[in-house]
Image 1 (tube, one colour):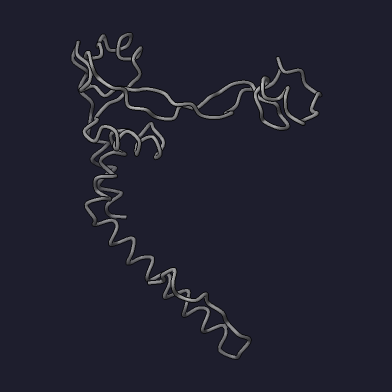
Image 2: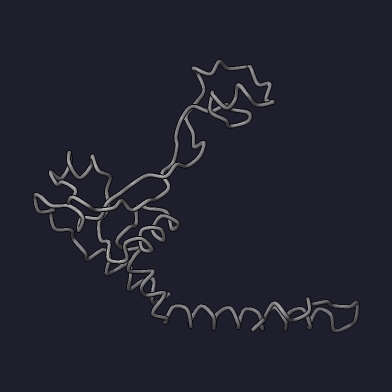
Length: 174
């Protein structure tokens, strides 16, 4: 397997250059396949699949944040979502799990800044007035969510886990 301490590969102009290149690439591919097989069978990868199966609507960064802050989390939602959609209330004394939430707002078609940042930028775009700009991602902000274990109230509806099990089986056989 290639490590950072190994020198970079160099192929001098020779009659065997083509064969040397192909042989080296084949060795790299073999190392990559072995590494993927090793990772696939690891406990850490299985734990990651478990987290991903529980939080498939979240980015990989947010699933990592959730699992680091609350390793046993199974379903997360914001404070209002727990109240309004599930008739559940946060248990007193619970701490939020912090994730990154996207900021979607109107943005300049040229520099992609929101109107407030656009005013202070060097961008001279003025073809379309800001009130007609389309919406887009302009950044991220910290947002609190809570796990179901941090709430109390009405029971949650059961989820069908068959699809999750099928996904896990597929990913571990690839």
